Image 1 (tube, one colour):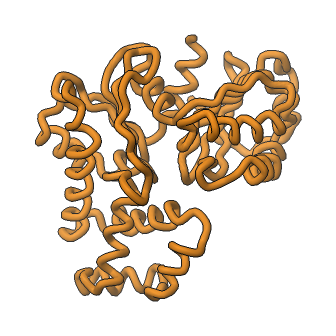
Image 2 (cartoon, rainbow, N blue to C red; image 1 turned 30 degrees about the vertical axis):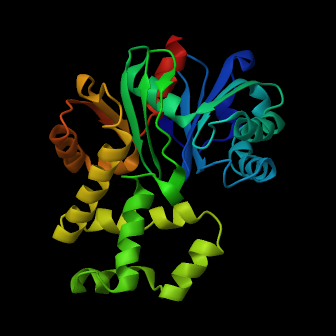
Length: 299
């Protein structure tokens, strides 16, 4: 079990400082960090997400140093395994690596894609099909060691079907056009107190527009038994399967395994959608961090 606790530096006394490992899973909205000695101590921390498509190295460093690095002495960490959304090419990996190297100067640092984190958390060293459905979405075929094939999700502007951003975008679009059912329209206005021009401003002039749009998925969660919301979620999941799952020729031969808050919240609908597209279902979990820690401790 991984504990999330408020700690002071005295809590870490007695740990062999040469063996501390920091493991991170970062989405676009939040990052889960686990500090472990490889044995009994596993301590969970949370910060915002660090997607290098939206944050540069300096911003990532400033955030980590003012939040995570305030909670323990970073010099006790000698290995960092960081998996993040957006860490899909060498340029973006280098942005994150630069920030981490500045924060954890005594550490060996590895930066990988969050898709690989999902695969290792869900399947360990076994091959199979893996999906992420959180703020964004993604899929891959995993061979038990590395990602063998991946259809580019294309991000929130062009893709990310099935994601919190996709669901939120459909809901806010219908609100702005006056298409929401009356009961939901009233609840939406009361919850967010937003006018159309304010939404436009946040989307086109504000920072992190993907996180802004994904925030409206919380409204879907609150009203997930409403027929309109069920319809929207079903549409989004069908688009996810049509574009990011069924395009793999072997998909029906593999079980569907998924990690992410949105997939977990709407688990029942996701199960039904997978079955309707001819796939059996394996694991559906909210977060990869526990499985990811187990993977690194075993390997």
